[in-house]
Length: 260
Image (cartoon, rainbow, N blue to C red):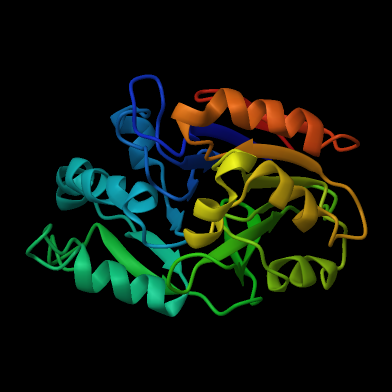
C-alpha cells in the first residue's frame, strides 16, 4: 500500500497544507488539499474520496477537483468519482456544499456523465477501492465523523486512520474486532498538553490524551502523527517525545510517500 501525503497540517499557512492522503494513486482519504498538490493527470486518476467528516479543512478541494475534471468528464465516458462517507457526512456535503449556492452540484453535471456521485457507507461494512478493502468506524468529533481501516489481499498490509478525533472508546474497540492487528495508525495531536481544555472542547487530542487513547489497544501499532496546529508545533513535538515514550512514531510531512 502506497500513501502520498498531500497535506497533513491542522493549519492553513504557507508551507502547511490541509489534510489529504492519496492511497495507491486513486483513493483519497479526505480532500483538504488536492488540486494544489496533484497534476491534472493525477487528479483524473482519482476514483474514490473517503471523507472522515464534513469540516471544511477535510473537504474543500472536492469543489476544485470537480471543477478541474468537468471538461474531462464532458468529453470522455468514465465512472464518476465516488464521495464516500457515513450518511450524515454525505447529507452535510449535499446540503451545505454541492448545493448550487456555495458550489455547483457536480453530482448532476454534466448531465450525461456527472463528475461526482455519493456512496453512503455503513459502519463496519467493507467496500473495495483502489485494490484495497476499506471500512469506516465512528469516532468522536464532528457530526457523524468516522475513521477508516484499509487493508490489502494480505491483511498484514493494513492502515488505520482516525481522522480528527477526541477521546473515545468506540473506534479502539472496533479495531480489536478486526481479524488482524493494525500495524500502522494515522492519528492526530492537534494541541499541546497546555491546551487540554481547548482540545477537549473541540474534540481533538493532545499528546497526553493520545497516550491514554493508545493504551486502549492491546498492541502497539506504529503511529503516524498528523493535524498538528502549526503555531503550536514545537510544543506539541516536545510533549510527544515525553508522552509517546515506548511507541514508535513518525511526524508526517507534506509530499512524503509512505509504504505500508
